[in-house]
Length: 423
Ligand code: PLP
Image (cartoon, rainbow, N blue to C red; front, side, top):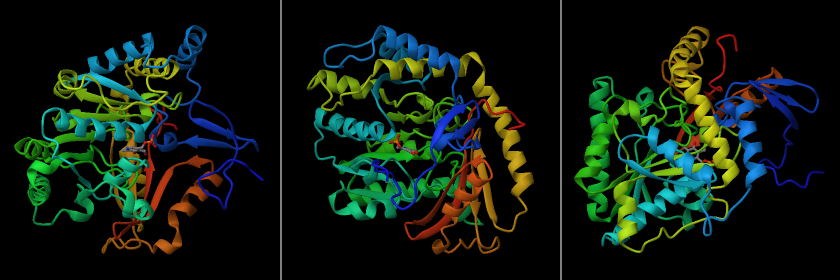
C-alpha cells in the first residue's frame, strides 16, 4: 500500500528508476521512448551533463537563499538571459516554481497594475474555452475546461470564456483563415463590450493551445487582431507560453511567429527542462514601473521563488539550446516530424486532424472523418491509448473527455529537442 497521494487512486503508476537521453526505464527493466517530454517538459532529454554539472556547482556554492533577504547570481543571470532573448518590450522576470504559479502571479500582477494606476474597478478576466492554464484557483478560473472547473466553480474568480482558435472544428467553409481570425477578435471585442470595457483586466490565452485542445496553432493575423482589440480598451494581453514557449515550436517564444508582444508572458516546463521546478512571468516595463512608482512592491511571493539551483539549471538549459542550435533543429526537424506523422497516420479513418509546429504536434481522433464525430467519452480512449502506448514502450500524452460540452480525443507529441529522425 502506497502512502503517496497519487493523482489516480484506483491504479498505481509504474515506478520510474532511471532516464537518459530519450529513454525512461522502469523498475521492471522496461524501456520507454519519451515522445512527449512528460507533458512537453523535457526539452533537452534526460541526464544532460551540462545541466547536471551546473546544478552540482550551484549546490556546492549556495543551495537556497530567501528572496526577502537576498538575490542570487543564478537568478540575476537567468533574468538577464531571458530578457536578452525575449520579445522587445519585456523588461523584468518574476521567477516562480512552475506553470500554475506563473499564471497565478501574472493574473495578480495584471490586477495590481490597474490598482496602482487608479483603475481598481477592473476586476474581470476574459479567456478562451478549451484552454489550460493550470490547476491553482486563479489559473483554473481562466482555464477553459469546464470539466476541470466544475467542482470548484463556486469558489473561482469570475471569468468569461470566448472561442478558441480551432480551425479544424470552427472555421467556416466560406471563410479564409484571416477572416476567421478577424471573427474571433470581433467575438473578443463583443465580450469586452458586454462586460464593460472599464471592468476588464486582461485577455488570457495560450499562444499555441496545448493540453486541452491538442495543439491549436493560431491562424495568421489572429493574435495581431486580438492585440489591437485589447489595446483599444486598455485591456492587458497575457500570453501563456508555459507549454508552447522555450523553443517548443521552433522559436524561443511562440508569439514571435505571430508578431505580437504580450504585456505579460508566462513560461515554465521547458524553462527548467524538467531538471528543476521553475517558471517565470515576463513583464513589460510599464507594469513594473507602475508598481515601482506606486506601492513599491508586488503583493505576492512564495518561499521558493528564484531558487538558486532551479535558476542555475534553467540557465544551463538556455545555454545548451543556443549553443547547440536547437531552435533551428526544432524548426527543420519539426517539419519533417509533421510530414512523417501525416504520412503514417494521415489516411487513418479515425484521424481527423494532424496539426502543430516545431516539436509540438497534436493528432485529433474522430469516430468518423466526414462528420468529425468524436468518440463516445465512455470509451475512455485516452486512458487506453496511454496504456497501450506504454505497453509498446512509447510515452505520448493523450487527452480526452468533455470540454465545454464538446467531446474530443487527441494525442499530444512533444519530444525532447534532441530527438533524432531515427527516434
Ligand atoms: N499553462 C499551460 C499552457 C500549461 O500547459 C500548463 C501545464 O500543463 C500550465 C499552465 C500549468 O503548469 P504547471 O503544471 O507547471 O503548474
